[in-house]
Image 1 (cartoon, rainbow, N blue to C red):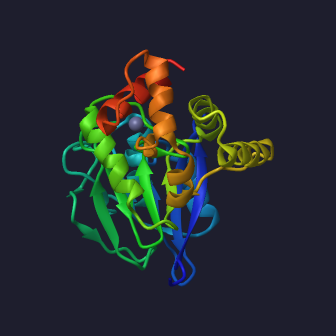
Image 2 (cartoon, rainbow, N blue to C red):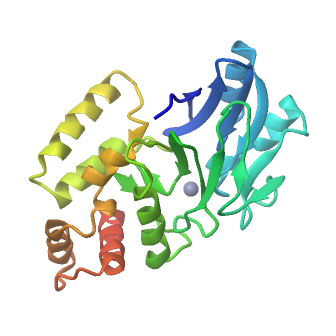
Length: 263
Ligand SMILES: [Zn+2]
């Protein structure tokens, strides 16, 4: 595997959002993903003398797009805003869909567009050989709320993300890891890997550090929403919803998502 040519910096916004800023050692371009707020991004760009090359948008929620207008006022209206063809039409200038490839100098490696509906209907992710920026679809140890999609859609989107190469770094848009791990532990009380992950995440948060990125490999091992084929998880879901055990992935996803909503 080659070496990742770009750096990714977490810019904190609101209570628990991360705006990801991608920059490159060999040029002064940067790209931001889901700038819900502009002020912390502009401050970072000024401080590091960067030039905003593009904005990437995963979905239309305001905590992901709210800073776009002010960022363009600052950086210039000609900065392209890549976003889902099915939503966020008020801010997106370059609508993209599954199969599209984006070339940006800050990344210097191609970015593939994946369609991952479920949290919203048009939700997309941006994926390179090294990382995936997946907004509110896949979280560390969890997944987004199902606001617009169906269980069929959402389960497929998560399965598509889980099928990415194991070492892919996962950059989701919120710091929800501790709460998600608490839920994962309720689903799988005897999972040792999960217990180790929880103490690691607690140590990071105590130092004020992000628990993100995670990796596809870690998520496959510990994220209950990616482990719906596991017999123990199926039994836990059935027990919680007082239903018969089923191996149907979509039914299990729907029941697990409901369980988490009320957790
Ligand atoms: Zn959202």
